[in-house]
Length: 123
Image (cartoon, rainbow, N blue to C red; front, top):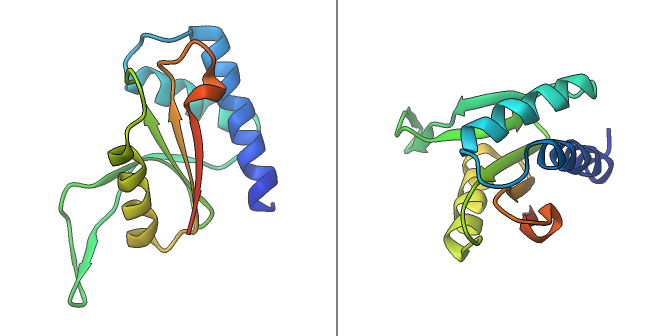
């Protein structure tokens, strides 16, 4: 599936979660519900995937975890914060570089309108 079509489907699933739950919950609640919606849409997704650092050829577990990974295709970083900040984008960019994946979605569920909390990042 082409990445643009895939991100549109993921955004649709996220909108469904937000429409059902609204803002104000913990990030983990949105993550669990988004995983459910993705699976219902036939999209293979994994949550809380370990992301080691490749340091001088050695893989080191530094405690990084991807909120949601669509293997080899897309990283989804979830937030439930007042407003997305530059550090959130930087975090996603770092995850993309470490994983070798080219596209990520940053989704902040703590918005009245979810589209105001969406950001697509590509390397």
